[in-house]
Length: 303
Image (cartoon, rainbow, N blue to C red):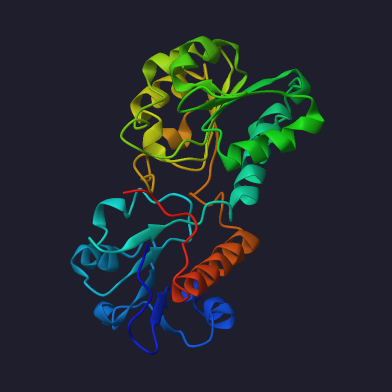
């Protein structure tokens, strides 16, 4: 458990995009400061960094005063290897479930309705609608976001198959993927990026998907092998909707941009709705209050 602050007026530092909201909801007695290039990070007790803040991430391992690092994203792979020895890392799990799940639904409906395919069209053609009711959607990474996707799919009558790191209750284990992939009309990737999941969806897994199946990645780019994906979508055998890629940002001219099977690529934005962002900042404020009171923090990331 992170120790409560020793200073009379602890400091919480956050990027500009969250600064005003955190100042509004932070507990009394906390000084909320702007996390910018002029800030002395050794004066910060509670740090809320951004994955894009390279200078802060480079300095993070050497900091001696920071007690808590609270992300406003569910994923923490970008900061885990940089944590100061005595600090506690917490994520924002649960705050962005709904917008990510809605993005996934947009991808599934955009593919089944053919609207994504028709979006760039400049001439009339004949296409057949598909029914989500007839689909089997395989969700790889059945955490809180996966459960939300399953709930949103329920009214459509879609068959949802969930996969977790190990089999339990109604979920299949990751070792069962080879047997599950051939019957999936869509594979939704929501697994966190770890040593075990890097390249989880590779050439063999993509080859196991049936012709015309859809890959939806709203997790992390490296969970899917990019070269293997390029090979499948370039021929058009598989379709894909991607919010994340490897590399990221995806360079201009990369073959994924023009591959016939790629229906859409969005710039890693699936969870970045205004309400999702607000919930993440409000969670950070509650975490500050718990830390000040010497209580156990929520969403602690094991180290």
